[in-house]
Image (cartoon, rainbow, N blue to C red; front, side, top):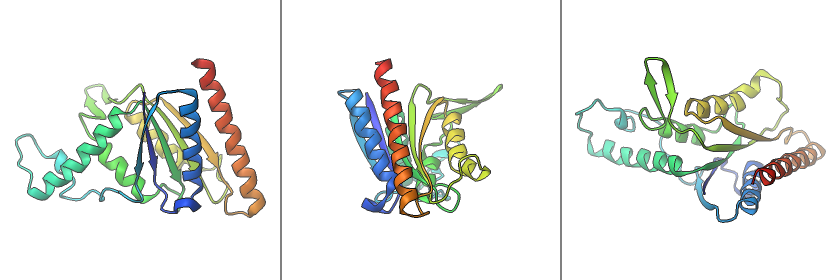
Length: 206
């Protein structure tokens, strides 16, 4: 089994999403011995945002990419191949300005490739990356569960991975992290409860 561990927060050791994603990975390895983990740190190695050159992988058939486009295509190919090879993706996704970090969006734009992770058919779009499990460590400074604001984080990630054909998308939440030390401690404790419950469920299925 291959697990892709993706972090997107630039806060290093001060990042709660990194703390939680690492905990999730450790618990997954404990309940699934032999899991091979690959770590992708988008804060240290983020792809550039899509532009005329990095859209090269979408050139019409027979089109000749420039040297710059070839380099950008290689980045996109590396990222989408890494994603497709993984059975499990653990994703650290903090909320920044009511959305996901720009580094995470840039990664998603690179792996959203027609013919690789999805395709269009006469019946509509079809995901090509099904059968994977995605676990998101979703962190927030405020409390937004049940609010439309959460849809810009949870809803977006559920939508895009669903578009890729992935139906097993799970969330571990820690919110209210900027609302005082007591709120932060309570949020982390609740996140640990969620991780423990998920681990117990996995152990029961093993």
